[in-house]
Amino acid sequence: MDVSRQNLYSTLPNMLSLAQHARFVAIDLEMSGISVHNAGSNSSITSPQKAYSQAKKAAEVFTIIEIGLTFIQYDEGSSQYSTKTFNIPLSPEMPYGHVPYHIAHGLTQRLDRIAGFSMSSLKFLKDNRFDLNKSFNDGCFYLGRHEEKIARQWVHSLRPRHEQPRNEKASNDDIDFSTLSTEYNSFYARARLTIEDMIVRPNRQGNTTATIHDSGFKDLTTLHLSLVMHLVREEFQQCKVLPPTTSPVREIRVQVTDESSQPEDPDIAQKLQQVEYIVGLRYLFEALAGGSLPPRIQQHWACPAQPQQGPGAYTGFNLNFDVTRCEEALRKSRPIVVGHNLFYDLVFIYRTFFGPLPDNLDDFLLEIHQLFPRIVDTKYLATRKPQGNSGLSYISLRGDSQTLLDEDSDTLAEMKGLEVSHPALLEPASKQIKLVPMPGENYSAREIHILPVWSDDFWAVYGNKTRVGGAGVVCFV
Image 1 (cartoon, rainbow, N blue to C red):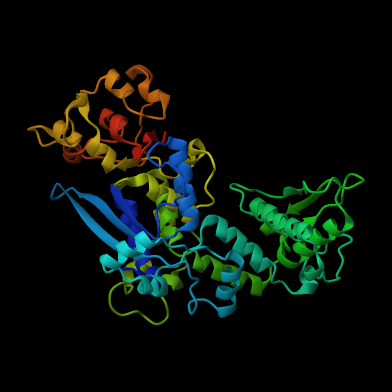
Image 2: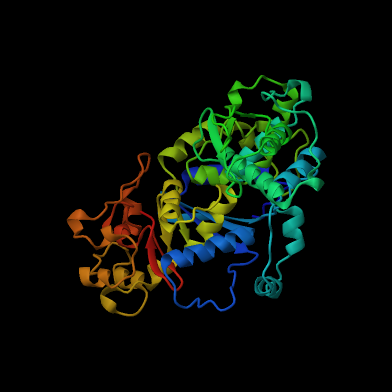
């Protein structure tokens, strides 16, 4: 089924319900580019960290333009798996026409997303008759977690002047940036990034403080302080500049307060709801990651006053869909994420929907494992060679019994021959990490005969690992 910005919210309850009941969800992405080449670099010799750094750079330059999702659910009556597939074009453009113009335009300028393209990817898309215009013009909208935080801060900056918190000793005098030196303009830009980083910090609670320095100056001047006060007054009204604690001033501290401490304002509340609407497709990935859904997905989004016609038109199902129950169920049991050559897809998914990518590979693997604790890379599953024999390993496992439950004959020596970046995998069986099923997960005897449960030794060998081109295998646990 094709999903677009026109039917996203009318289709979302169905996709959330499928995620709630699915055993697996298969994910495949199309990106506007997959690699950033540096002249003189040798990409054939690499390490897992270097491969991740290259993927990170690509995800920061290029963008997802299409997502394919297939939900796979076991049917007890037929003893078979049923599938439902969705084709979801993605657009970095704000949903003009779905929210007020000043909200869409303001966030376009505030976020200023980068959407680069590589010519080789464009050639591939063209050869496969991919409609790029349709993707950009009618693709689904979204806000990542970090983008939503920035957007909410921006909305608070729209408070009328008489309602905005005042900073002590803040000056109302406008600063003429055209007369500033390059050093001061650079300081202003770095101060903005420092405050934004504080705002989007994961798990930020209550009042949080950012410290602004300038390595180019031994001591900060009055102009430095005025610039930060101007920045907070114009762009970060939920923040305040704290009084300096030293003389001369060596650092400027900016504190952001919890949104709940802000006075209610009907106009601001309405704008915040519009920001929540633009979150869009990320709600589905929040569900797959066990994140929070209600009270965000409001019924009038999925059931507009004017009923839709055609594919994706809502029915009584949308009216009765229980978002809270769906969220609770997904926290207890989420589908296993499946993909082919999944590493790059996960890098792009994290960058698009969850936040800036960490610099270190180990930190990224930890973040992904917290979001998606169960991952299957079919490329790794298909190419891993038991006892050094050639051929697809899953065929070797199945044999004549047509099941994946045959004992895996891999030896410790063969395991050591793999470039696996997790030392626990090389430990004796008694010391290896044991995979555990999710608390709300149930398997029938019929299904277990087809595929092993997640806690089976089969998945200890094949689960939560992915191949990385030129760098071997990495593990997500």
